Length: 273
Image (cartoon, rainbow, N blue to C red):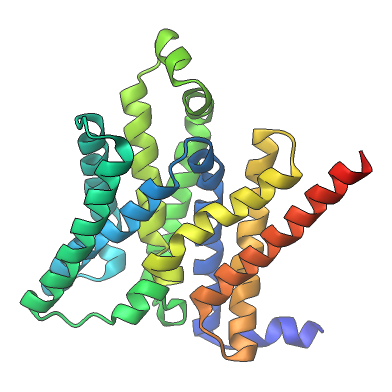
């Protein structure tokens, strides 16, 4: 049993992958409960898809996805926040327009600029190919995201549950809104190489949703969500290694399995009561 657990650590690429998967799992599952509480699932998906044009332009000028992470995520967050706030056509409609148009623009730019991007890796992730530089960037982003959430935790919590009350109390809700959008987009962009554009939403929401089923308080759900996120990422990576499966989809399916288990556990609790 111990040999099975330690075997992947014989390879440097697996060590890099496990560290990256853990960092991505922490970031996404930490923000997941906030995103669910604020009904921002569609917004998060739009953020992931909106990165494609920036990635295409960046690769054209010789940058990697990791190097583009922070500037791309900040631009996306500010743009999305501004458009939604100043649009009178509804939040879902605004997000839907941005989602589809940016994704389409990304594919057009890839064709026009004739850049070499493996679309399958971008859509579904290729964590086994991360470099030491990529690991450093993702871990740094993780430390930054966790630090900001800890520093502004009370304000973000207040704003998430009662934005009107937060404004009455004198909190700068515009700052808190953009702050959360930025750290959410940073986490999403940092995780693109882990699970890809298509599956990043599942790793953001599924561990958080599973934790919500088996916990009674929001703070507890955050810790349980992080545990589920790390478990899903690392277990999925192990399964992909031993069973020769695609890493990103396997991690997502493990998270889904945890959600299903939590669903039935929550139902059993209700039956006993």
